[in-house]
Image (tube, rainbow, N blue to C red; front, side, top):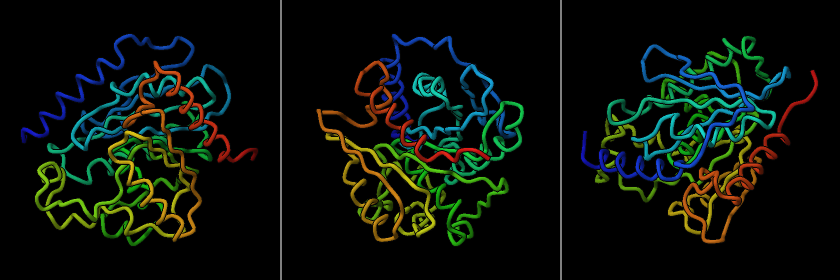
Length: 286
């Protein structure tokens, strides 16, 4: 493994541990841990659900971490905080680069969707109302998975085919990266660890494959997000293709993926806004 991957894992792990050090798991939700959604031991998810008998709409969380870091444990408090407000939340660990090259994470998201279909009755999940959230590299991955669901040409290029017959009602992309036109993949040390070869460069360019069938999306960034320029470029493409979208920009000196720090009032305020957006996109009554 390259030192850049080790450095990211060490730095991000230390930061996440500090962020969550005073948090406790809530007692008012159901927690189902370490459910397998694939054959690899890394393919595990946690499911958090409200403590009621209602059929529950679903949020899938696609975690960030520069494509090489992260798992469900680093997102459990954030995801749990969403789960006592009507929604079931799927918090999954996916296979990371460089041990598993692109598009392993997208294959894993596809398996999670299969898992939902197979387990909906067991956990009382509403498959007519499936949503997803991604942040940073997870937002990038989610933006690509939305292409798999909506663009047959992209399916054929990446060779990932949904077998679940499910769709996303809407998604939220937080502080993500979507513009790779100025991203020098030939010399960038990190992406050399992520991609199998330079021939895959075209497959990570979300903007090149968005069409009018793309998933409705809310995009968030903020004043001190080092990726904030990506949001505007994505929005230009969505407007060009007549894709329904909303855009939220926070000032107040907020930084990259600030919403994950649920100890902060502003983070909880935005996360409630995420849920409001999903409620607005729900299909009701069948």
